[in-house]
Length: 453
Image (tube, rainbow, N blue to C red):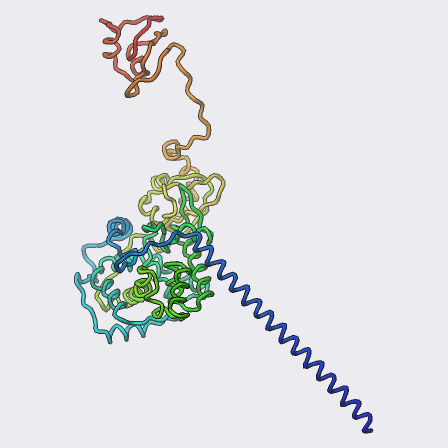
């Protein structure tokens, strides 16, 4: 019995040893797989950062503190023109903004920031305070206009951010990027609501040519921005660093982290960031504050004339926004605001599918009158000719071109010609022809040679 028990014990110990060895091997394999996954992810992150850095031109640094592009004085005229086309400011409104406004104590600013339901860290310090008061005291009119136009754009941003599981408060990023102007174009070459550089836009599927700039397309650019922000978060795991990298590129943020001794905290790397980026996160916090507490500062949203209820339709034919405007009786400025991606007001067509955004009430009219719209003054609006034959020289004319469109040489009169018809052809006057040929009357005959100077 003891002998059998000993054999059983030995077998059990052997089996246990084998199981332990297998478990150890599995654990080792799991660790290797995990390490390999981490290495692959790190390589993917590095590749993304390299591609972005290579695609973008370096943002020039400035000696002095730089404001967000949307609040730069150089943008004022462009923004005013844009807001005038999309904002209605009636003479009488229930809510009227103060012209000056009042600031608050540090304690009030801190308490209000902490009450905002946000995943992102909304910290407070003198730099953030400076930006808050830039919004609520100095640029109140722009905040009023952005609140108005935000009624159209914020739902677009919120839907895309929510679908991707990103913080909804990121909807305020275009406030500091473009002041919610889809046609904004920065000194560095960034374009659209989300201010994509051309190279980064290409990486995230935003095409561009002489007629179209997808960076200005509110929906396409928003979806691209969401993917870009999500990729940056995979790298940093901190939204303040993500926002900083969105502004100056991952390369500059990585350099700042290294110079700060490896600290991955925005305020720790603050002095090592490019000058413009130092104000970027504070500006975002301030924009979030201003868009949330505008009522407390007696700022009233401007009334918007862009329809909140809009819809899109696919178009494959070449059509000009003016054709749509005149046939459907829609203000062309409104069409441009709804379709800012079309640089020259032209939807190229050519068999490709393009998106046209219209007020919801006009979708049915476009479908019913599509052929009439495309045919309306087509020769005037679509000037690109597919085939052109060069003009043939007049067999009765010998000579070259002259100044001012006049033709220089000898013209042989044909049957049926008159001085007025010849003058019209040669872009001169009857009086000139008579003077050059010493003619006393308007009578001419076939075969007669006339000088044309």
